[in-house]
Length: 304
Image (tube, rainbow, N blue to C red; front, side):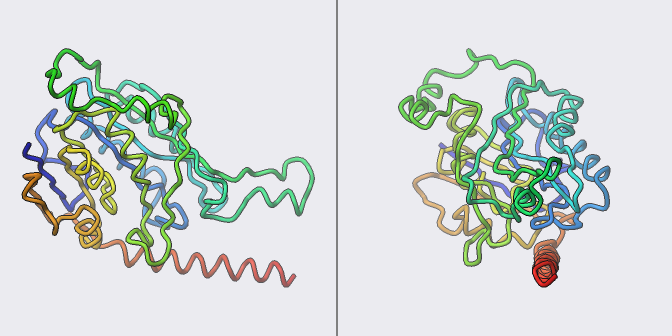
């Protein structure tokens, strides 16, 4: 089985490298609009963010094969005290692009894995009505489908090679619309340091549930390369788009491009377009400034 892995450094609003209906599954997590500790000030406005996502959604509809699924990991985001309804707005954008809204899975994280300050603590200081703000330990996995899938179109041998492990399916409760999976914290020393990566287990479940062995998975916001790494492990080809060229070394290491086995007959290709950008250093500096400001504000609050 010849598997192909292609990384295109460029803006996913234009995926001209991909022919119409050439991929079988989309698994991705778009940047969360100006999230303070991931993408501070990345977009000039929420409207600009939605315009970008609208163009990406239409490109995904074009390149996705008929009957196939796009899985979008996202959540509402809080920026400077304002909450932006990303889940609702992306749902509408994808429906307007032509997709059917098939399902929504809630990804539940452990309580101790909150990355920002506990908003619920306000009640401890002000135990009165209207001071309550909950801590967020969940994200959404929005599942969209391009029309209806023809199950008879899959050859029997491919179907059998892609058979799910029913014991795992039941034991880990994949059948629920709430999945409990530990998230990846971008801690110092990790390969994903400073990168908002989703867990491999999340990508693994989605790829097993919505694609067949030998098919092609697309991630238009590849990030550190989690989707591609898992697709390779599960014997699927993968194409990834990533605008930030500074992530190339991370993707190479995570996907294992330098350790291609002759046994799996895999080919790797990296394309660098003129619209590739350099974001990682700039974002990391912005994040440091925000954290420093937050620490100073907390110190001043204690002193007062």
